[in-house]
Image 1: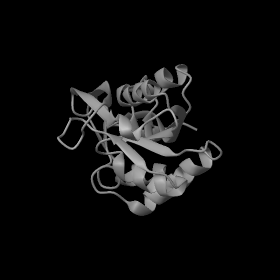
Image 2 (image 1 turned 45 degrees about the vertical axis):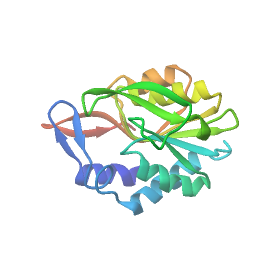
Image 3 (image 1 turned 90 degrees about the horizontal axis):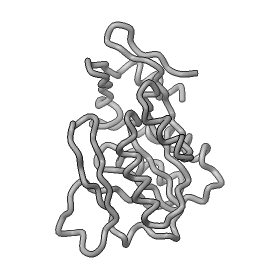
Length: 191
């Protein structure tokens, strides 16, 4: 998606260690106009899948998932990184390692909000190592819901996550796929 690539080129900041900061428009301050275009593109890509739930993980995916959900006309469910008093009853759970935060979380989704009747699209901000996406996939499979695929804003295609998830037979539609990036050379996108 050229618009997202343009935003990354203009506002993204590359840091050592393979970190791409996009917090000025994607995952801290959120550009809703951009999110709307991203939601429309995911709707176009997954049209005909009869999506009735969007699943994401807290916190960075929630904003874009909500805007995409408007396009699909369905609710958003987000996997929480900790159990709270508000979640009563049974939950689906998976372990997820965060590349950005350098820690492992037990993410949970209430069984009330994800069942075998659901047709689910995962929406998330980044795909790098694939741990978060793999955890959400496990939760969907455990619930018996149908997994339509994953809509990813930015995929670091030079890291193994995208291949890992696609090799599992999961459809992944990334709006910007980075082939290479470094502080010295900038960003190269895949064609």
